[in-house]
Amino acid sequence: MVKTWCYLGLFFLLIDLAYALPQGFVYLSEVDPTILQEMRYAGYHNFIGRPVKGYGSDVCILTKPAADALVAIQKKLLHSSLSLKVYDCYRPTTAVTDFIAWSKESVHQEMKQEFYPHINKADVFRLGYVAKKSGHSRGSTVDLTIVPMPAPLQAKYYKGQKLVACTAPYMQRFRDNSIDMGTGFDCLDKVAHAFSNNIHGIAYQNRIRLRQIMLEHGFEPYTYEWWHFTLKEEPYPDSYFSFDVK
Image (cartoon, rainbow, N blue to C red; front, top):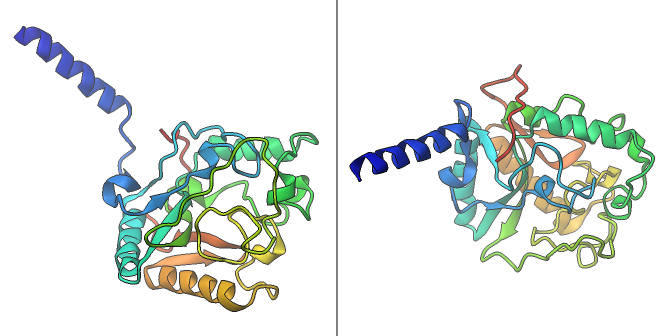
């Protein structure tokens, strides 16, 4: 009986080792379970319209310094009854390759009406909305927003449902419980640029609030996407990882 338990213990240990993250990476939920997660590329509600290669699970993985910086931001936001919500964290290079292949296909434009209503899918790289060498693959880049607390009910996306442009007014576009940022997440459009002249009032103030708190905690914003930030002192500035998200 003792021998059997030893074998079982060894078996489960081997399983844990098989799924261990590379050194320096952590699961965000294990560092701070209060940060909300809606990992879009693991499901169907994204600009491709299906799970992206390399995303075997809907979990956020980041380098430890990036995760720790988000923890500090979350603590500050919670004092104002707000919370971070992440859409994408570490992105394997296999996912980037998948994006490139998708952009070259003339078919599979099921999600155009919501995510890129005003551009051609073939131009997503040229226009700077997706990178052929993504900072996400270095593990210290994150796509995120701010959600009021207690968090409003998260809208459910159903494959094949009627789509509304990400540029539509706040009360009309997909409701993912984010505060109003002027567009939905992954809106491949000029109005998603951080300082778009078409964004005013509360939406503009919300973008500034997100940008400011990220800057205060060591993140560098990306001009073309209000949701995209990279840790300035990232530990792997020249490394692009390919391990799967699982």
